[in-house]
Length: 355
Image (cartoon, rainbow, N blue to C red):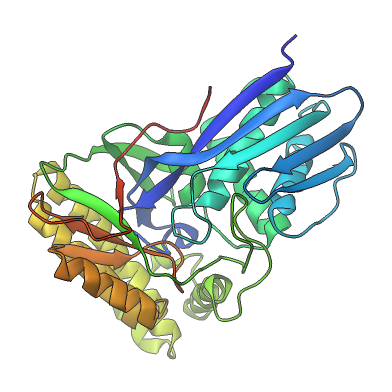
């Protein structure tokens, strides 16, 4: 009987397709090398002991009765509760959490944490793996119901299904995931911190991601898209057309316009990547940024300055990453460019796994 398991889940960079996942649209993320590691050690007794090394913080609770908590503890308790609700018989365990992803950066530290926790708990309990889609949905429930962030499935699927040198075209209507070769041919993808922390639900720094509610933030955009659907009489914005938006009040029309045009940009980026047209990819990144800034209104002055800094360094395209309201900016630079101080070089890497 195994007494220990170690799980790693990567963060992700979403090349293009932002705020489309919960609107049943399209996105094109890839997993990166950095992520969250959870070491699970079996304990006698029915309790969970969790230690977040980067925060020097701990939590202890009964295995059978996890209660709502704040911050990183919400992820641990939510993972235990959701696995149990799925019929998984868990054992008592000590969980040691470490990570190399900055929270609030748009690199999806929160989804990586949820995925790594679940993989470690499943392995140390000898419960067997879950299918990637089922596990992604379970991890999404952790964020939705325990953390309070109305995220879709983009981050979880990217963390679970990532492949080296590949992006993932995810269709959130059908939940189909297709590999798209991401050959940069000498170009570089980098992320640069705007210096402004974001959270899907206003949070705590470090390993554990986010908790709480950010007024005017991600959750509000989610609600605005849902209101647009109700007014249009459709189930999701995937069923809308640009012509239909004329009857919507602002800002709902602008929010829906971003989603529809962003879906189109994802498809155009797939074509450009398959054709090796990186210049076209750069132009699409710029167009995505403009839409997120103007129609979706999730940029900030700090983000705009960071995007301009990347372009001044030679980037042929740059855009805000993640939910917005701060975090990192993604830039596509030629090999001749000098990477700005503080920028992180990111490359498509393999997905979550046991170590």
